Length: 185
Image 1 (cartoon, rainbow, N blue to C red):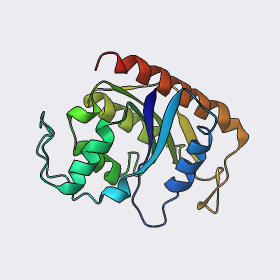
Image 2: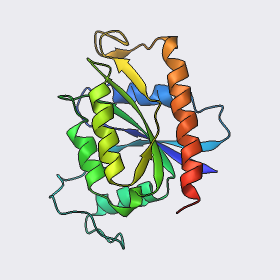
Image 3: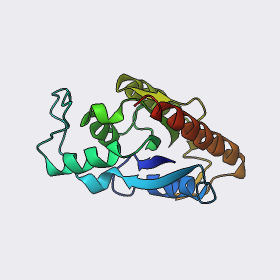
Image 4: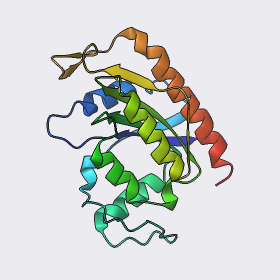
């Protein structure tokens, strides 16, 4: 069985990403093809990445928070990234969390669920490029939510049922690819 982490990709005060991630997790409750775990990057309290490439093949990081993050990411086979769109990009905190690691990401699969004023499309594209650079196979279907129509007052998440199929497809493809990628690790 593969393990998939649903990663909350924002640490901002007043964030709505936890609501979106909980909603994504609700789609996993009756699934028996994978184990799903909600992971909040805010729990790891990273310092800002210092720009040194994470080429630590032995995964011996100095910072305890990075060690814990490394261990968590290493034990997973795939990811669903829940990310807001900030300035046509992913959140700086999510980029920071990804940049702190290296080999832990390689040869795994990921999907994304984004939200923003333009459905988070730019965030998904930026995330796709970043994940590809660390060796993750990014699946094609993704969730795309509008801050204007899927949130009441831009703060209370109320998605339409028309999103269900895209979320289910994203989960299906992430699990399928995570199983395939596990055979080459």
